[in-house]
Amino acid sequence: MSLRPLFVTQVYEASLASGPGFAAFNAGLADACRMLAAEDQAGRAWCREHGYRGYTSYGSLADLPHRMPEFAELKRHLDRHALLYAKALNFDLARKPRLDSLWVNILKPGGGHSGHIHPHAFLSGTVYVEVPDGASALKLEDPRLPMMMARPGVHADAPDAEKPFVYLAPQAGTVLMWESWLRHEVPPNAAKSERVSVSFNYA
Image (cartoon, rainbow, N blue to C red; front, side, top):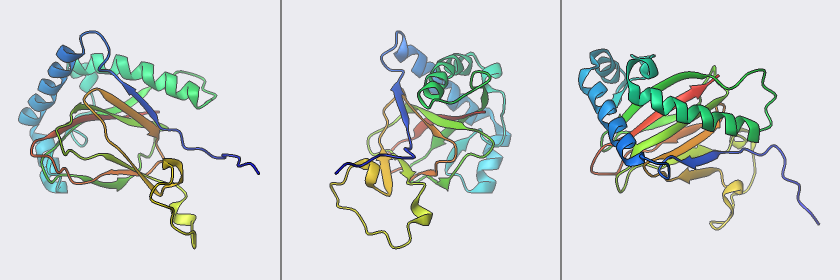
């Protein structure tokens, strides 16, 4: 007997932490994120309106790589990883993946982000800046879940590829990327301090 894996969902994982100058780069990126949280009045208003526990620039700022050098440097890193991921997926592209949007997320204790997808893009992801002990993992949902009907549950020790949900626990510098149709969420932050990340879309 043999099993043939089909329609595989490939999630990309890498780290910036092993690169030269990472500590200084990451500290500067954290400072830039917090400066935006302090000064972006439109972003804070968007968070209040949408019940976001913390700060995100998602609804207010669309030009971070042009606005601040820390995000321009981050874009250079992400462009390289997006191209590697697209090649690994065997995408037939007429051009390199292009950064479409990039935004800051600062989740206070208790803050989270319910399940969602990223329309109008084909690659999405997050780079993690500060991940304190107890901070939320990224929860990924099996895209077949709505069609499973009477499928039995799986054993607790089943491999990740067979589970309906997979939790990925990042560290500072972790880069996670997935295809934009993959539903995912951030459970409530159980840490005692803020969880800082930068999310992005490529189109």
